Image 1 (cartoon, rainbow, N blue to C red):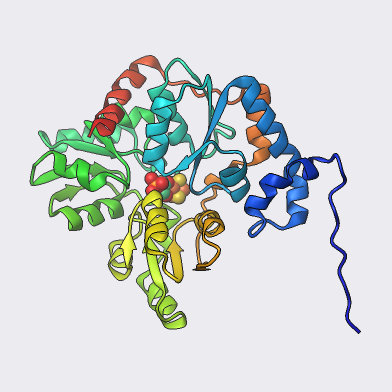
Image 2 (cartoon, helix red, strand yellow):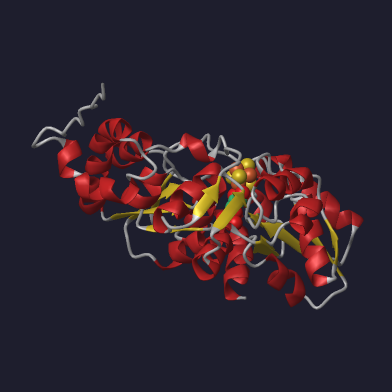
Length: 335
Ligand code: 13P
Ligand code: SF4
């Protein structure tokens, strides 16, 4: 005997019903029961954004309900920094990790920048202090120092220029020197050195998400899924980058999929990337081994709503540090 599972219809007049047009965008990756829990916050955020003239900048690693249903701007670290520099909103909510909110604040000292959970850190940003940078400068006088944006404002204040994974090679080459310092990600530094031919001194920092991928993961994937296209983030170890078909920032990975439309693809990076992109390309097969970033996952629609309702947590940077750090970020944006 066949059985039929009744589909529960959202009650007319409920938040679930009123947000059904938003649910349409994510129904392939969020089950209806889960949307029932998220709908209230999603709806409240839509109203709060208008009331407060706020924009939500969301990183590509945010969950699909944030990325597709409440964010105004989505992208990689470079896109978020660029967009933060040009917004005319009064309030910026950063759905991402703390260094991203600090970068937005550096570029908008007069605006309110809110971080829904200030505990959302980053293993790279935590790996180096301003004193470490000063020590590196003493040990290698005359070498320019480039800081990955995944650093604190206090570290950015000590360096010559910033970079992201989207422009690291360009920033390194801009000095026209045979040797530079780029910190704190040793793997990104090694990957950029291989790409540019410039000798790069780095630091022992690693991304806790990307350091876990291995070249054997890729070999196994290729065996299990013949013809698969493998995309990786340049925070992965060099042997992983060498074994991949393409390495690039999260934004570059998304563009690669859009342009090349590989019929079967794996993104060796944070898990929400595939969820977010697969929504846009339902005809492509996304194979999904991935690692979660526990920091990115601290941001939820519940704490974004709370941030807007209660004006928390306001990002503040000491003005002297901010002035010096801003120069490093603005130099990067000018390149
Ligand atoms: P992207 O700049 O490529 O978005 O990377 C940010 C990040 O934190 C990657 O782990
Ligand atoms: Fe930091 Fe890695 Fe998380 Fe990105 S994925 S925020 S680099 S820990």
